[in-house]
Amino acid sequence: MDIGNFLNPVEESVDLIESEEEGSSETLLEHLITGASNTGDVYNDDQEDDSPEPAPLPKPLEALNAVRLLISYMEGQDVSRASLLRSLERLERDLESEIITSRTQGTLDSWLR
Image (cartoon, rainbow, N blue to C red; front, side, top):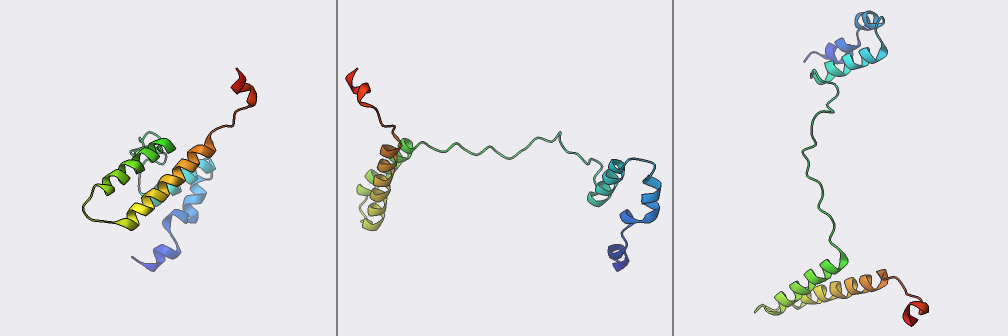
């Protein structure tokens, strides 16, 4: 590509800007964007977003049940992986404490009813 195209792009030429002065500045902006992107459609609002929605986060109790399942699986294996098992048990304790602290504290009146 010629270096002159980079220094003096056609989209920024004075003739184009002067010819567009009769139109609105939005028209000029759309023309510049169209020329830069080489597409005819400046606004692509009609396109659907094909990206999948993120999966919802599991609840702490679901995560705790999954960790317990992994612990029981690891305990049943022939190969001893004590460090992995200790890590899973530590994660189990952390999840249990998170569940306990997230509970709301009741009042004494709720116990008397």
